[in-house]
Amino acid sequence: MSMIPEPVLFVDDTPEALEVIVRLFAGEHAIFTAASAEQALEMCRTHGPFAVVVSDYEMPGQRGAELLARVREGWPETVTMLLTGVVEVDVAVEALHAGGIFRFLEKPCPREVLAHALRDGIEEYRRRREASMRASQLDFSRQCLEQFNGELESRFNEQARALVRLHRFVSELNGCESVAQVAHVTAEAVREVCDVGAVEVVLARRGDGSDPCTEHSGGELGNTLESQPITGIEGVLGTIRVRADTARRLTESARGMLASLAASCAVAARNAIRRRERDEAQQATIFALAKLAEQRDNETGKHLERVSEYSRLIALGLVEDGWYRELITSEWVDVLAKSAPLHDIGKVGIPDHILLKPGKLTPDEWREMRRHTELGADTLRSVISESANQPFLRMSLDIAWCHHEKWDGSGYPRGLRCEEIPLAARIVALSDVYDALTSERPYKSAWTHDAALQWILQGSGSHFDPRVVDAFVQRAARADEIRARLADTELDLARVAAVHPARAAG
Image 1 (tube, rainbow, N blue to C red):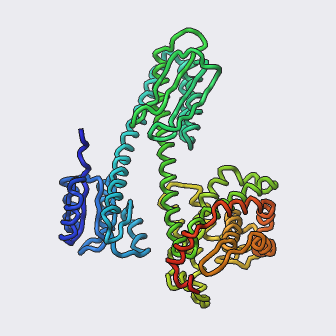
Image 2 (cartoon, rainbow, N blue to C red):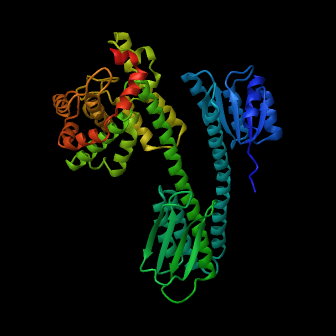
Image 3 (cartoon, rainbow, N blue to C red):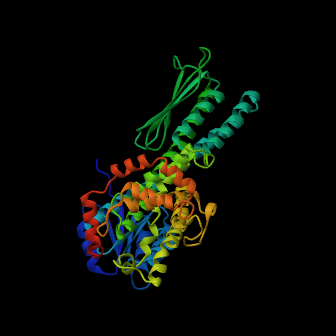
């Protein structure tokens, strides 16, 4: 049986545009239209909630961003998109702060792009609806805990111990960042609360049930006494299997506790999966913005990947050399590798006549170009204020802001020196320079690996952190291997030449 299509509302003061939308998507979605903000709000009240509301930016009376803000306030699960022909930073900032826009679409918008955006919006709408269902599941777990409290009078000693452990279990679940941590915490709690000899918890790391992880507590599982499914909104996420120390069966109370633990485990696992998916999606979105900045500049297709790999190499090298071991954990290195590609994200705000100028910049133009560090920091600072707290965003801000600072204080934008410069920025600064020197551009030849190495050595203690230079130089052969493995192709260079013909000819 086919699913009933989710309703979608398009708002535009141009009747012809609405007629085209209806004609293009009437067979795929339940399309509703409105010619003004007032009519759109009335449609939401009478026919809503809509899965997606797509509004034109410029309309008589109330603007699209203001309309979508009111939609978000009245129908928080509805996904809002802004369709605009005005591609300006202030438009985006206004819409982000006012309306919580899910996606910006540029007019004229190709059908394929709009269709893909609608599919993503409907999926996001369904995810938001699922969130309320997850809240109900949490309420179920709390109700189970309240039931256990009611039994304290008759089984005080046993239940008091179990209750203390359950509270600790909930607290531990709140601190879990991954599905593996959820499984481990659950296994330990089940063994103590249910008083069993061995526990095995199997949980999927992804929402489709794939990539399972297994955690044990206690001895060998042997013959399983009880098995409890871990069930989420989508279905079974995993299983808890337990073995008692004797041949006795679990009591009804223990079974209830096991079911409650499984329910809480399911909620925590789903949250961990969603957190991972959300982080991956946000990282992909911001990385796409970094690629946009790269394509407006003269960088080739694999520049960001190489800078990321060089930065990882240097960070691991510093630890091997005995430096910053308390700071540079494996997690810190992973965050650095994700953050490094965002170093020039601020260049999206530099005017083309400066960014693409083939000749030497004037002093005023150079001052404007240097602003890309502050623009990048401001952009990421805005994202952080609207997002969950992610380490890679905080580190990305440090890198975007400070990767042109120099060890001797002669860099920009703030003239920081030595340890005042964040370590991540000091690492990316060297990685970026090495890649720029050794990469071919339409307007210059690539330096040899050895020539670039000598130039970096000359900058040790002035341009670069000496420790960072030492870590890189000692692993120069591995850096050269990365350079060869991620070398630009002729197609990459041809793309840059096509985008920047003036520079290619210069």
